Image (tube, rainbow, N blue to C red; front, side):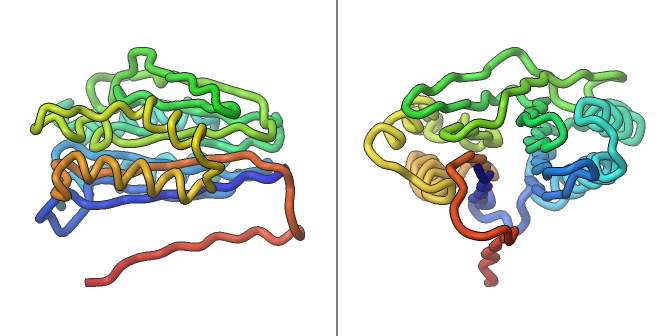
Length: 234
């Protein structure tokens, strides 16, 4: 088997800096974690918040701290520094080779989706953003690593896409239709979901949008680890 990760991001329309921050860190006991945070509002202030949260989390994960504890520590730090006046959502998707599982940590009201073949399960248990109070606890979902597994995570720019024109996004149905009609790569799925959200906002995104797709497939090729990043420069 092999795990493939793809990300697609875009800023809020007419805003030069995204309030979403995403980083990847290798886990000391094997595997890697992807950390995605969305700071309150948008622009430079939101970026500072999400960067602070992500840096705190990846620093702890790199030291071997468990995902849930890292999320709680980041929340306490945000609450202390901003006196509970600023919040941030957080998602951590970890491929944990020591346990043979994918660990999904969520402090985000937006749902996430776990797909097995054409079966799409929505994980929408109530979840509280970071920074609202002390000892905010994440919702943690742990699933075995298996071929055919796809996890889709996004910030609330997807959830609210289309609302201003009365055509709200149905992310679950869109993901299901793509998986039924195609055999998408992780990047194709992330790009398609992002493009649909942007289209529903008349190509003027009403919020920062980030889409993260983690897919487990049959192993192909050699033992080399690879990562490709595309950063458009204005």
